[in-house]
Image (cartoon, rainbow, N blue to C red; front, side, top):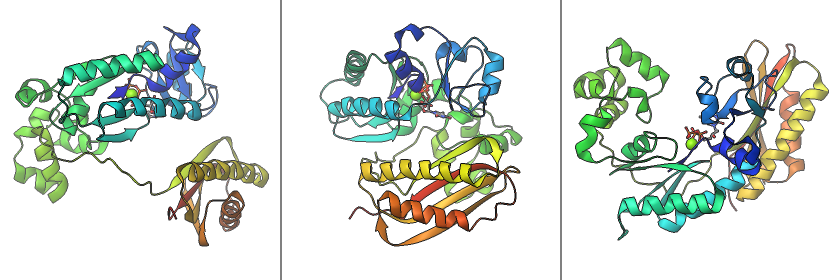
Length: 336
Ligand code: TTP
Ligand code: MG
């Protein structure tokens, strides 16, 4: 299951007057300022706006769109509600992202279509939101299927559909194939999943190494036996912010860092972790990026300790150039 235009849909949910309008969620919500699009409503997508596009470009494409800031707290709250509903339908759930999850329903007596219909109904009744669902024999195909008829889609892919429905799709639709691999494959004249499936196992292993080559070979045939990961431990919590204008004002940088520390500490406490090392990242105006790490004498989850460590890191940077971005990460997590 994957929610449709999730951040935008949550905004429409609390402000129904926005329904049907082109809506762009990103950054501070001010398209004259720095920031990227987190998501756009389907109305705004018709103008060519998509996730990760600079807000200023989105504004050029669709000046009459409504631009809103990211309210992560609210999306996260709704995300919890949705995950709880998914969980009602199977104890075996893999939580993938803020708006996405896999459910193993192989043990259920009801048909998969029946379950999918009930999930959609429940989600809509409780939250007013819509989602798209893919039903398939494995995670790889279910993920592709969930994306095939968005929004409010329900797509079933069986092993016998692979040739007719999966092979015509571009290679990018395969999980784990990003722009880089896409580029390499294009040089080999491979653009669709079917063309990938026509390549020999040896050729793919030669080109991409043992494990990734083997993965591509199997994925192009719709093969995937990876289990659902039902329990997942975070490795770190991090936050970063890009300044509206590059700055060399220490006060401005320090204040942002203190705000980021507060958010990271809130995450630690909410999830019940303590951190053993704190890292500060600085990106300068020329995009050079540096980090400094401080190891704590013992794991901590209190703001004062984390803040002090972060400021000790900050003091170890040579701030000769203007700063574009500052970030903080709490790693070395433990739960005791
Ligand atoms: P997606 O599920 O990729 O996108 P979506 O739910 O907005 O739209 P779709 O109907 O195509 O599924 O991501 C879920 C949310 O994650 C999305 O609403 C905003 C956020 N997000 C970002 O902040 N940046 C990104 O680059 C992407 C892809 C998503
Ligand atoms: Mg989504």
